[in-house]
Amino acid sequence: MLRIITCNLNGIRSAWRKGFLPWLLAQKADVVCLQELKAQAADLTDEMSAPDGLHTYYRCADRRGYSGVGLWCRRKPDRVIDVLESAEFDREGRYLRADFGPLSVISLYLPSGSSSEQRQEAKFRFMEFMYPHLVGLANSGRELVVCADWNIAHREIDLKNWRSNGRNSGFLPEERAWVSRLLEAGGWHDVYRKLHPDSTEESYTWWSNRGQAWAKNVGWRLDYQLASAGMADKARRAAVYKAQRFSDHAPLTIDYDYALPADNSD
Image (cartoon, rainbow, N blue to C red):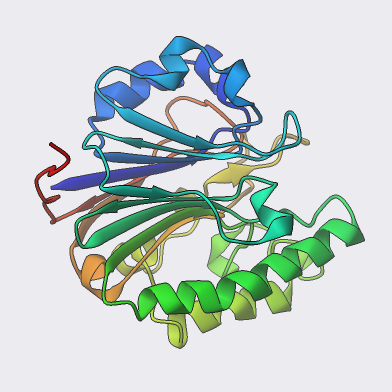
């Protein structure tokens, strides 16, 4: 069984102080995808750089305290790719890919457009750039899992207050249509929805820090694992962990009936 966990940490140092590492190590995940590190390499402690039994890889943003993605792998990858060949978005640390034989696992962090019109335009540029990249991956013949904070709730059942958010970033018609294209024509599959097609409140992975969103479970499902058809068919269990809070996001764990190939690095 292959266990993949994805989580937006909203700051790796903050999540560390809240007990993320002990929880994570107890999960015995094979691959962990992290988003929004909000740290530079120099900010990472020795423990963050080398958690017990894991190979760690980070792509930090050039800007301090901003964005950044990470991958923790129990088995050393055959190859790690940390660039999209986009001058704009590589600076923001939004992409990290690990290859294990015929399988690729990607940690991805889409921009949020909620802070300004300029950032929404940047989000649209990222979506336009990423679509052919993702479709190309889906058609590559490899098995694939993309773990991301997509910053998009795809359907009405993916957020509590969908009626009042139709004109807000994260639930705009253009954003939702982009996800639909990935799923309907792009070769990708929403693994959580494959296993839990009708779940609502239990599927949320993000809650605003405003008001009492967490207490009232006024949430959004923003963190997805999208997979190639072969990997999606191998998914057996998906769960959102909410018993502890490490971030304004919750970790999403999915187990796949798949065995990583042996490490041939030696």
